[in-house]
Image (cartoon, rainbow, N blue to C red):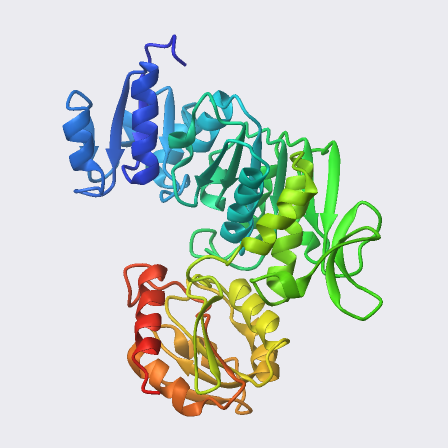
Length: 449
């Protein structure tokens, strides 16, 4: 690539696209930039720092793209976009930021994807590596763009990867890779076909040395080529060389590896069966990456969870309020409802709804019936969720987050949990899921005692 005088084009000028720009500039590679938007987010930065670079904004020029040697397509743009597909058909290489990182990283990669929990597990593995004294770089779809992590002194890369990023990744060759779970998400991108979404996720296993497999969700593991080593985890009692949950002689539940009890789940600050599974996944990934057990367990006991991901907000009048705004799909909401519902002394009051992204909400019906006292609906596609429920659970409608939280407080009883876990994207009403969570927290803090 560095020896070629042919044109490289960065398609998409958001955060990841700008990281590709910086990387190509450092490498001395001639490149141009294209974006479908008239004023992309990083345009001012590009014009300030790289005024000599050609930029074309607006409708993509298929013939121009077809003249390139490589297109570095940002995750937000589907590679089936007609102009990009036309260039690919003409023999142009389609790549992305993760491929570039994999080709240039001098340290091994822990690669993590899944419909849900990948941010939590990625963060946990990063903290485990740091606790073990390693110089670790954590990012990708989470936090810092992958290419901005490149450094000679990094000992381990821990990357959260989305299906969008994996679409343009062909040479990952991770030391250890996992797809944590699969549930319907981004069906608007994948033409309503779950199989296409799964295919994109499975690309994470290309060239991997070890695959970490969730025994509770085997559809998440279907690699297109053999993997040298497997390490498994699940929420049942573990077999040898597997992570799972087991009880001690007194009946207390523990994280376990084979016959070895590692730590009681009561010592974890993150609660619910789904979070116990996340802890087991992180331990399996860390073990495959060569991390010692003692610092991994210390990192687990210290971990308080991530903002907007089953985040404890407050307890008021005997009712606990949990912010799970990051639950932007059905699978994430299911994990929270079932994980917290099983541990709840009372019932859940669920806030759900938003931009449904073409999802099927049928799977929510039984867990809601089992664990919820009421559902407070909010957002554009809330009616689609309501349509799959029967009248065994009270249904309440709200126009904004303040109304929703007030309705929850009026409905909840002592021992209940009010859970914001929308099963939908936030973009119909909010700028992002973080803002939705912030509005929830503000509304809870404003409740009269």
